[in-house]
Image (cartoon, rainbow, N blue to C red; front, side, top):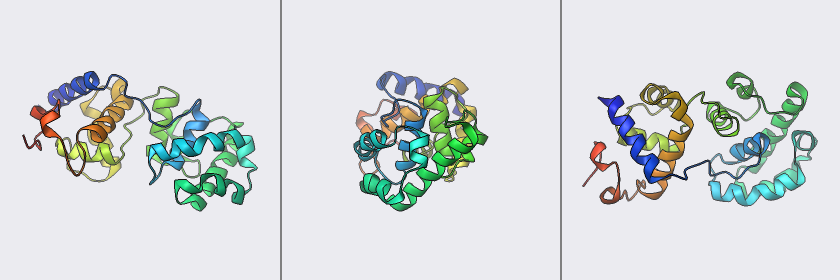
Length: 209
C-alpha cells in the first residue's frame, strides 16, 4: 500500500535527518515571509547572505512599506529578479500595514491575498512560523522525489500537494517538506542520485541499486 510505504519513508528520513528544518534564516514570521519571497529562483544560501542587511534596514512591515524601490533593489540585487522582488516585498509590507496592523496573518486565505505570496509561500509561513500544518510545501526537490517515489504522477505543485496530503498525518506535513528537501540535496541529487547510500532505496521504485 502506498500509504504504508509513505509512513516508512517518513520514519526513515526522520531518523536520517533529525535536524531537518527550514533553511531560511529568520527570527519571526515577517522575516520568514521576506526571505521566502526572495527565495524564488534563488538558493537559500544566497538568500541568507542577503537578508541580514535587509532586516537591519527594514526590521518590520512599517519600515519596508516606506522603502524606496531603488534602495531596496540595491540590497537584494544578488538574489536575482531584484526589481520584481522589490515590488513584491514593498507591496506585501504595505498590505500588512493596511490590512493587518503590520502583522503577518495566520490563515492561508489572508496570506495568499498578499502581493508576491502564493500557496507555496503561505505553506512555508504557516508551517514554520506558526506551526500550522495547512498543507505541504512543494518545491523542486519535493516534486522530484514525489515522482521518483511514485507518490504521484502529477507535475503541477498544487496537484502534487493534494496527492501527498492523504499519505501523511497532518501534523507531519511541514516536516515532510524539510525531510524530502534534505534528502534531495544530500543523497537523491538530481543529476547523480546516490542510491547506494539511500536509506529508502528499497522503498523507492526508481532506485538503481
